[in-house]
Image (cartoon, rainbow, N blue to C red; front, side):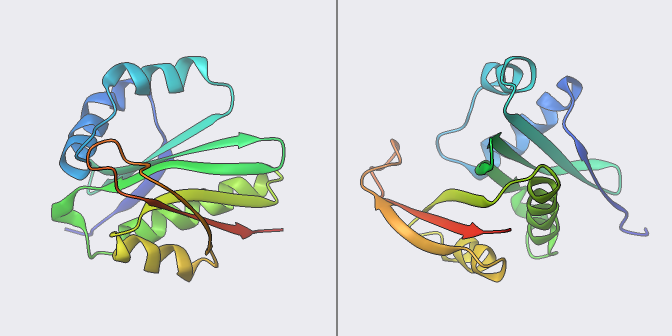
Length: 150
């Protein structure tokens, strides 16, 4: 196979595949209804999927409000990690934010998720604070990371 990678806007018809990624990636998964609302009712939401050889293997979401952007989530199926797909998807999200006039980008990441933190640091994000007991499944703290991109 040629390992074709495509990143495109998420469509409503992608939600089932995105739910597979969501459930395999997070202990507290979003529901189908949340994704549906994000795609149909949130004017600030921008969601993308990444396809690998025609299969959706990851997705990412971003809210853009004026010149601020917040990554809501980013996930790659565990069996496809280590192929730099998360890096490609994150780069796409940053580029999308830039062309929409964003000056600052932020996100929350689990304190224990060192792999994700390393990825975000590659793109210039730095820790800016802690959200105590942010994650409801185990009360783990979140590190708020941010970067000025303009």
